[in-house]
Image (cartoon, rainbow, N blue to C red; front, side, top):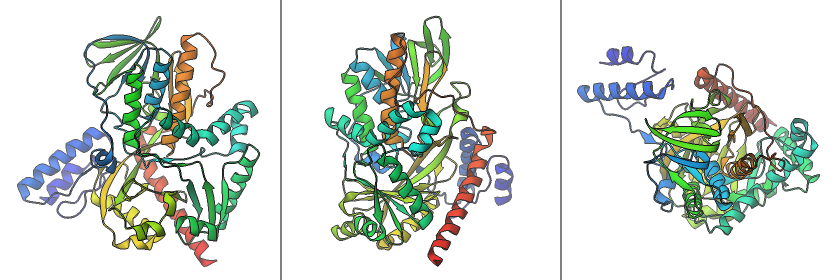
Length: 490
């Protein structure tokens, strides 16, 4: 039986074991992975082997259990004409839809699955300031004038999101008690201090923490210092998504779920989108807001991002004693390495922790063991707690490590590539996409955008990205290990 399974798996995956041992797959194509699982289940059933539990990255998440109910949406059942069609009902698409509907434009949002099915319903929920580049780098890339707008946007991202939550009374468990980024060694700490100094020239926003102050604010030992952003915080991401949909629909936007766009054709006065076999949506402008779940709909777009998987876990509700020792005052926390570890409490006192995961969309219990070990290493008090939730999803990475605003053809605009900072960046990108679409509809130039239009580089040999990502993650993990060992020996 084992020999037969080994032959069947050849070409579909890198490794599989039947019994009480975990399956491990290298994703080549989702269809192949699903087909292989059907075959394995058949053999396991016939042979009497117990199957390993599969974890659904969306439906098994903590956010599904604690989110508010979403507005009623459904399939597109008739063809439509609108000013702007938006593909994707996540942070970006729904923020764009809200702003466009508020200014009187007709909006049709088309979502292939359900509200927040992508990262918007699975994210680690941190609302952070900034990008993965500092002011000097942005000035070098964009020039002084554009960079200053982008820097101001970065500094104001948490404020923008939380003001939006308050203005529209979004029920999404907002917490704005700050964010800590720790430094594992003097080199990282030096880079953090330099970054904080760069921001001082633009009004600041980051505070440098010494070793003792970081320990006091976070409860974490073993770090040489870090940064603190007082304006940052967190939200319940699926609730935030559903609430955005609610207020966008109240403003006049139409949202259709389980309505994947199968075709996109440029016409004389805009675009025509095909849904299913016959339904059409005609729009003057199209916004593509699919981030890590981007497919082949827009030629060449998928190659501009690599979807890295992130896995998340959540503890049982912690005691007041543990909560006073681990991240007191509910600050969000990031262990700054090449492969970061991030943490945050939910409203019930569960500690939610995220890390990198396997390069596939099917998860298994053993995929979460590494993040548990890392969490216990930072906070040994977690060694005896129960882990109640396990889930995961995709994070869209770009060559530049920055998000992009891109117009591959006139009237077809996309914004994506948040590199792990999608809650805040997806919000401000949606706002900017709405500005760009309004300007195009009015035949005007977009002169006040926080992001510049760019032509982002694609990843060479993108079809092999699962293998490339695995190699990159392994190399980053090894370098983090060396770096940590050097720091502990000093």
